[in-house]
Image (cartoon, rainbow, N blue to C red; front, side):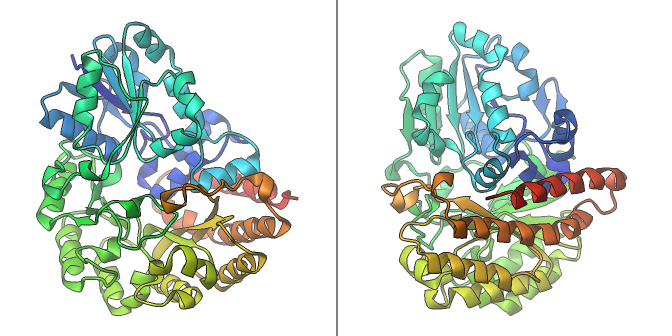
Length: 487
């Protein structure tokens, strides 16, 4: 049996019917749809064999690969099959994406519905499960890490309340082995460990995954060159994977027989292989030509409107390549503001190679190209940025109006002090002005305009689409009603 177990809560151990857009449903709180049905609609459980999921979150797979490389006995298990696996385990690593619902969509939906979102509910349920509580009494150590680990800095009391031994934040390749070794040997663990600059792994130190990831997600690089002040990722060095490494991880996913598509993950897929903000046409085309012939479909994790707007011909070429296998693809895009004044202050390089003064036009041009080429963005806006004035909010609302005919979701999030802005105050719902509430409503109305179209695209051709579509539309309708009740 394994000394080390790795897992994640129910909302993360799902392939979302192989559609990442449905994953946003985990950000919503319990609602009029019965919980058993809602979970099936938005985050059905992964299939398992002897308690081990056929696929798992990519970050968990990277940790698994590193620990195996260092000689640990490791198993990745479903949260529904923990009790038996925990009998011999000495330490469990738990992957956290949004443990307190402080992420973009979560904060908005929690404000609208006035309840804790599903992803936070299930994370806490996992930590408080009888299986883990019993194992803790027998000496089990609990280490929590992942993209949501930063949230514990703002919920420090929860580390003790949830009986967590160590919260780990950052890229772990050079550190996780030491922490898990210390846990197995019964040594005292740091309550919160943040990876230092000197501990960030080089490309050569990042292992390939050895088991398949959910929906075929694989990294193509780490870090970001844009330097936005509100983001932690820009504090890490930029590294692009060689295509050979990407191809190896793609092979791991496809050879399993459980994954047929790929989601290319980077902070800006359009900048793959580039050391500045100008897309590298040769490397981008080679990457997509290498991948597309092997998969049933492609999606991107993130890209920037500026990179798309700067290279319309290249973007159209990429679209033609991708659309050989599918009718559309999705991505997450950070718009953050419609105000060029705010853009100049906190994210001037986000507009590169254009000027931040032209941010509004850059967004409109980039989003227009995405619409024309059937790339569907889920966009974020930040509400309550430091020094934001009423005219800045008005300009953001004007931008949303100018995007009304462009197929997209636009999700506002409350400002969280990260990156170089950690000394700033949180923005909470108590600080919402009438103008802020109008902005939330404007975003929701935009989303409701497009949601039926996106649902048609997302579940088209599936045997269950007529039945499920009515429930998805029902949830959309109740959300629309709730938004219109905002005072």
